[in-house]
Length: 190
Image 1: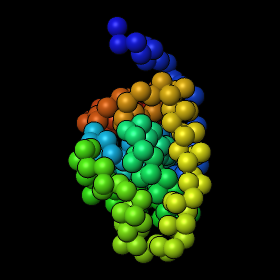
Image 2: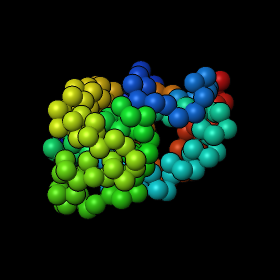
Image 3: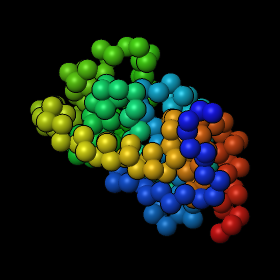
């Protein structure tokens, strides 16, 4: 017995959160990803699967895509997620999100996610470094990051990435075919 509650079998009511959505607001299928920027499986999902979902479903108006924080790998994860919120304050959440996954360090490399480094990465994306530094150093977005973690846990998330396709959970770095099948099943019910 893992001590974990059993995964829900039916749809779970999960909110899309407050970050900008990708795709059309009225798309028939909602895909919500709970992830940690430091999680190697999340990086694998980003690289191997997410881009295909964007191209085939989000860009075609069938899916709206939401990202939620599930920063469970310690303080540096919290900082990375708070940094993405600071990027969002300047209208560049998705650019910062993509950069963190494209340049992910090994999980053991904590220095890579130090606040001064996260601020430096923001400069490379053309963000106002002073505003970004003030934002990150103030910890003003810590409550949103914590709220997502709590709401994810309530929805049954206990590892990353976890996706919800119209409320049906898919756990782990699922291959594109598995996510595609879940999306097609959700589309068929519409």
